[in-house]
Structures are given as structure tokens and as C-alpha cells.
Image (cartoon, rainbow, N blue to C red; front, side, top):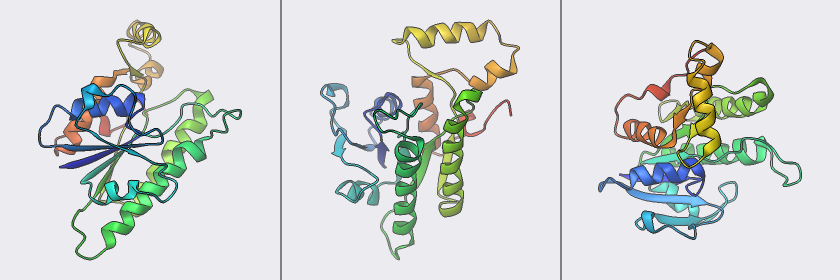
Length: 214
């Protein structure tokens, strides 16, 4: 199985690649604007592709032969100084991928029937309403163009043992387990997200394919 992780050098994408690299039957590609990270010894078998998925380029060849494309691209907050926005950095890359996969799947006798996995979000606080709207916009595009070839998972706040802040937030959440608000934040370790992704790829059920607390 050929799997391409778009945004494979980011926090979530790199965690998914680490998990996928444990399986001998997965051939892995990563597409990002930076290409290969400086230190990638733990991911020596990954094919690192440098490219901007909002623009035509060599990266499209990796998509064309992939059984699954996993979209990990996105930002938590826009930054006007850095000229980042939800449209430019979250919605547009996903739309580009969805449209490309849709077009190539329509080609008669195309060798690969590519599926699309989107890392969405379970919930966000009121001040991140635009963040959730961006996720929903991508999901709408998936439903329109890839209705039977796409799936989303809905993690909440993704934690990591090396990030003290997320550990603190998780402790606070556990102290308020009766709160619907905190349940919707759905704190989850990065490695668990990656394990749930594997379940989706191999056709098993995943608890992250449903939003909770709505």
C-alpha cells in the first residue's frame, strides 16, 4: 500500500509517519514545502517530496500512485504578519488535493483508486470558530467530490509527552471529566491519533471517525 502524508514534517504528520513506518507493507511518501527534515534518521525509508500542493509540481506524481492521501496541512491561528490564513493554509491545500484525486479517479483504467483521509477536529473554543469553519468547508468538498473515497477523523487537542503545556491541560481536563465542554476538547496523545489512522487505512473501525459531545 502506498501512502502519502501531506504535511509530513509537521507535528501531527510526523507522528503518523512514525507509526506507519513500523509496517513493512506500507510505502511512504511525505509532501511538504520544506521537503526532508534535517533529522529524519527514524524515517529513513520515507520518500521526501518538496512541493506546494496549491501549485502544480512534481508532488502530483506521488498523489497519482497513492492508495491513500492523508491531509495533515493546516494552522491553528492565522498570522497576518506571516501572511497566513485559514483559506490559504488550510482550505486551499485540501481543495487542491481533493480536486486532483477526483480528476485522476475519473480517468479510465487509472491504475490506483486513491482515497483521501482528512485530519479534522472534534471541537474548538468559541474564539476558534473560524478554525472549525475551515475544517467543515473541507469536509463539504470531500462530500461533494469524493463521497465514497474520503473519510475524516476528529481528534481534539493532540498532546505529546514532550510538550509540558499539553500535559498540564490534560490534567486539568481529567479533573473536570463531568464537563461536556472539556469532553468535546477530546485530549488525545499524538501516538493514539496515529494508531487510529492505521485502523482507518486497513479497514478497521476507529472511534475518531465520529464527533463527540455535539
